[in-house]
Length: 184
Image 1 (spheres, rainbow, N blue to C red):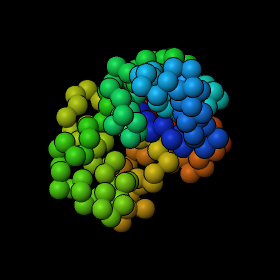
Image 2 (image 1 turned 60 degrees about the vertical axis):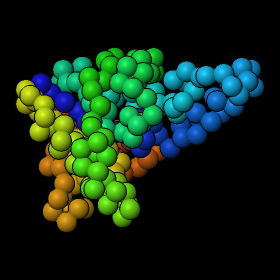
Image 3 (image 1 turned 45 degrees about the vertical axis):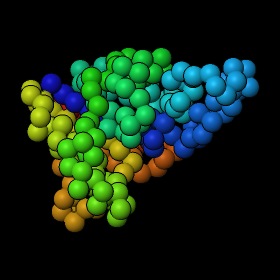
Image 4 (image 1 turned 90 degrees about the horizontal axis):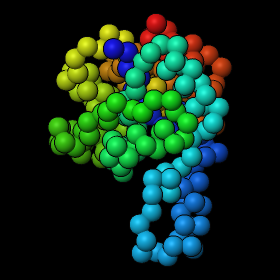
């Protein structure tokens, strides 16, 4: 199995999309009132349509599945996120969420949160998923947090693609080919 560990913000939810959930929620509340519960579309920012097109091309050409490594996993269930991705135009639903570091290494979670090492926490979550999963032959992590060994004093993910421009994400020139290199 081929797997993409997919972050959202800065990858497929780009900086011009950030905050769209607040606008959508404000409209929802005006119509439905503050006590009404709201659906997934109002809980998260929109995805960039061109970034979704690139993601779909990668999924189609490689046959890869994807696992949500984004912190969005802390605010919704897998089933809710599956519906959201499909509603936003992704051709496949995610197959899983990476585990939450707080659930399997509470001491490490508090240390990394305290020191602001978001990258290291996400690295541990992806490593835990890989250690527990069977049948993964190819994988890549795609994120705007730098999880490369070079950035993390030798500790990091070898199969990693950085999306350094939050306004371009996976649309940035060369990113798609870097992802494909790990999956083909």
